[in-house]
Length: 347
Image (cartoon, rainbow, N blue to C red):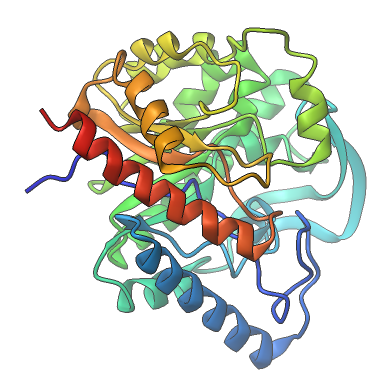
């Protein structure tokens, strides 16, 4: 029997204090070598169990083996200089980051996420989702010294990354991953470019996949720079309006979006006709724990624009910078709220 409103998360979860610095977006590891590998494995298993205990229907590895959702992939790519990072404004200069530089043709050194994907697959019978950064967002998170200036260089580099992402995605599918999600926060920043070529690069990254494909487009983690940016966006956040029609025509099956406590007009979800919609029912920019009733109410609002069998309950974004206790409580609220919505809207 197909379950209504399956509960899942956008991707990242907080790292335990014994693995890395806590409540940071770019945390430093607490160990190295084999000890670090074991710590990553322990944290991955801890969060899989926590997601199952909370009642989630689709679980992930919580990105416990990655320092950052983009750089965790880039570390296994040749042609990138991590030794000489440069300071660069990312997400249209919303905030500064120390980023590596692309200095030569790009190719994978080997598998990127085999360790944590195979570990997760071996330790859960639930559907398993695995996240990768999208090509446009990667381009926005590295400095280019190889592909050339201007939009033409950005496009060329995006498709080069898309090919590498595709190699890893196909391997993850072979590992037994059920859903591969590409994270594209850049789609909410470079609106025209996202519709013009970002979705095409995304489709290249997903080429040949027979498992479920998804894209996550949010307004960012609950860090101050993102909160400040949101405060400049006015009473209606209509960024989705430009890229959703292109995604509706694409081969990507699921779209994960921000909803609860946002100013996104919920009727924009109608633009995703024919897609599964992962509705953000958990606010990642607040430590206040949602009630199951609030979660069910958000699902009810989304049901005005999304068919029942297409609606999934999700978090607005990743929970990485949160405290472990708050994240755990929010996962429980997510699952309880989805269960309550099933009671309310089953008929």
